[in-house]
Image (tube, one colour):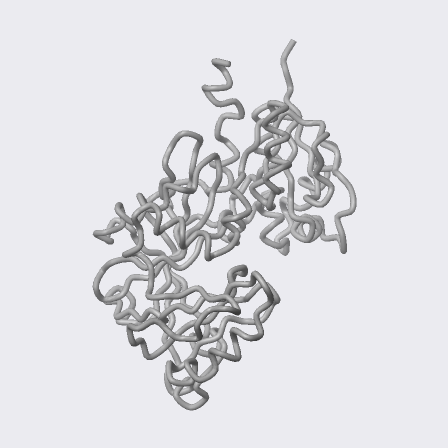
Amino acid sequence: MIFVPRLCIAVADEMLAASLGLPTAGHQLTPQEALRFRERRYRDGNSVYPAWYLFGCHAKAVEGMVETYRRQGADVFLCPAGLLSATIDAEIVDTQLCSLPEPLFSSWREKKITVFGYLPTAYAAKTNSVRALQKFGGAHFLPVQQIYTKNSIPQLPAIYRPVWLIKSAYGAAGRNSDGTPYTVWRQEHLQEELPALLARLADGEELICTEFVFTCDPYAGYADHVVHKMHFLSRPGEAPAPYGRYCQRFIYRCRHHLLAEKKVVTLGEFIGQPEIVPGRIDKVAAFADFVDSLSFMTGRVMFSVDFIIPPDGIPRFLEINKLAATFAETFDPALPPLIDYYASLPLVSEEHKQA
């Protein structure tokens, strides 16, 4: 008799609702329902990117997690993250598309449930990923920056930088945890306003003040702000590795005149809309050492890293994102989309086979 594992793909509630094209995702989807949505959404050219992750996209040549896992013999169902519990009826749970509290992760592991896509929730805070990078020898890959609480001394780092970026510990895509945009400041104005910014922080809340890193990129018309986004894949027992040799480059030309006039602007106002083109990480001399400093990202999980390369050639780490809106995009033309490759990895690891 062939064993058919029950595999649950857990998805953040709003992300699942968007994938289904529904206002809310209020219940667990059976394997039959998941397949019906896959048939409907796969050829929908207007579907949003979370739907590509789950159901694939014909136009993007993405199969999606539901179909890729099903082809490996799993009985695949979907569950909103808000409905996850210790009593889940599954042999495998994929949490790549949501956050998972550590106690729930531990309870599943005690029950011998295999968990994919898990990162400790601590790494959702940029401040913690910065501290982890420092711990693993990556301090020289960080911009000049400082982390503040409401009780911190309101003083900027001693190293002068004309432009600073302010962001919260939680957030992504240029927005803080409360939905407000990151802001860019002239140093003199930020020093004046820093006491007031810190006073508005809640107890336990952290604020990151980081130098705004400028580039002079000869591969991008000497643009002054070029952000690189690279796919990474980590597997149990292995250090994380870049997925292929290509990244995406977001090429910006900053509006210095606007900042000089206003003294503080939103990040979007300062950098404008990017030109997005591919880039090659094998042209970056220090990239291998940069990757080594990310070895705290363990387990079977995919993530993206944003970094920037100033004129000294040493990458500067910006942030990590497990829910990046790029995993269905093909960066390296020689490789399949990362979302499909990730889901095609063996459902049972060698250590489980031996056990």
